[in-house]
Length: 114
Image (tube, rainbow, N blue to C red):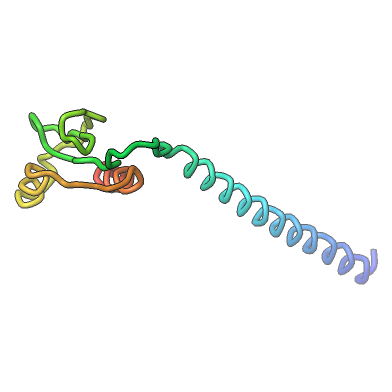
């Protein structure tokens, strides 16, 4: 084969990789948007009520517990180890942390479980 043929095949080969890479990036970006939309749709919908949609996060029996805004209805009990927190953080959680939305609650729990 001549030198021109090798260059031609090399150019086709390289352009194929470039096209495949660009398509992969485009598909990956679209899947990322779809995943974000799915996560947003997973959050609970607000009900039509006059009650505030807030959450309290407190320590009870060495566990981090999530309460509704009334501080009596338990939403979730977590397995977060409070011994990993400093004493000042434990005191803050003992008094309670109020989070206004479920999104803030999810962010708080995600940040404290990793």
